[in-house]
Image 1 (cartoon, rainbow, N blue to C red):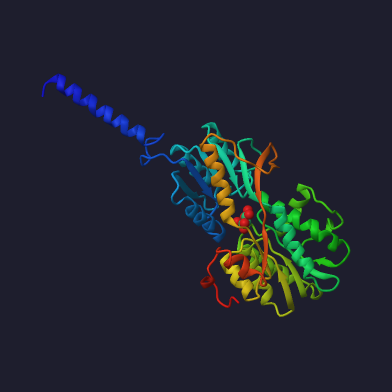
Image 2: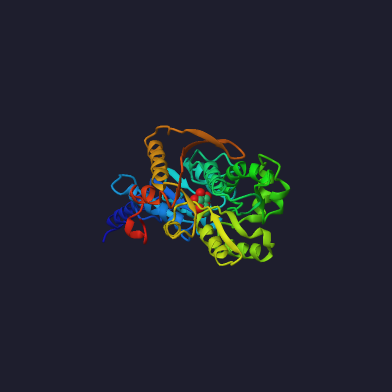
Length: 371
Ligand code: BGC
């Protein structure tokens, strides 16, 4: 081989290598094709988010956009890593449901720096200006619907009321509780309900609207951290120390389905509890079965198909260079984030079939004893 030929060969090799590297994405490690929309969800351990993953997949089949869904498994560090992975794959839009609303600030700021549009999904990202849009259900209405159910199904005066809340790192936990409090508080103040498990709530019983700090105090005391095990342990502790007049016919504000089932199991196995009404949220299949079996009283159905459609609709509008439609805004501690909000539906034994089966959300075969 002569020298000139060798040099040309080497040049060719370098050129081919450079072309391959360019096709591999920004870090040179990707699989070739760019991802246009990155989706980050909080955990695979709760059916709610697995449901969202499935609905995203259903919505995406047949579209021209490439997407990738990653789970953060309850860790803000993993969440940040996921966002970085997606940035390196060249995403233009990030749809993210934060594990911890404040901690996610760093991850979305990194995305923003790369010119990526950020859509907060279901949970707001707080204390940062790096969120462009928010797609959400009407979370205050979720809490208000749970509370209204308790009010509508109350028996007599001075009825024991047990309060439980979501994780304090989730802005939604505040919205749910604030929505519930507005409806419950007049009944607590006039003695219709007697709070059984929160001295902080008792201390605030005459306040119609609570500040964030006041909500924090109550949530700090009755949080489940969205963990059914923690909910179960707390409920057991509460019932162990409850006086006789805090048992009998009781009312329970449980923040979501996973925690509702855990709490219902504990109350259901206490012989001094003669009846209980317990709320929920998410219409998880296991809770739908509990409702059919009269072990959980209600759930708040949040049609994830709509949320996914709104989030993807926004992403596509952004990819096409447009500006998405919004219906209002949410203050996140730093800016007003333009938001698109969806209504929720109350489901109990009476309408479970119409709302969840006849709407094709679930199949009748998923349940037993459905009438
Ligand atoms: C969601 C609920 C969910 C909860 C626990 C909230 O932010 O809105 O649907 O049950 O988190 O994951």
